[in-house]
Length: 30
Image (tube, rainbow, N blue to C red):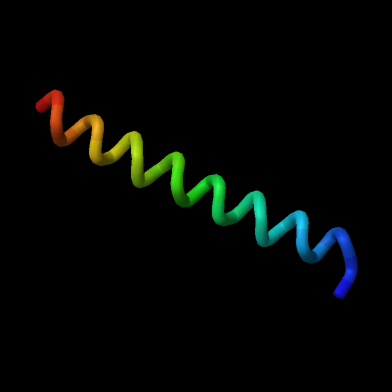
């Protein structure tokens, strides 16, 4: 496993969490 591959996975997970949080917040506000 290369560090670059691990970093890509971490960024993907963080991106997914942020998008899901924003979507939940939008549904709550709307």
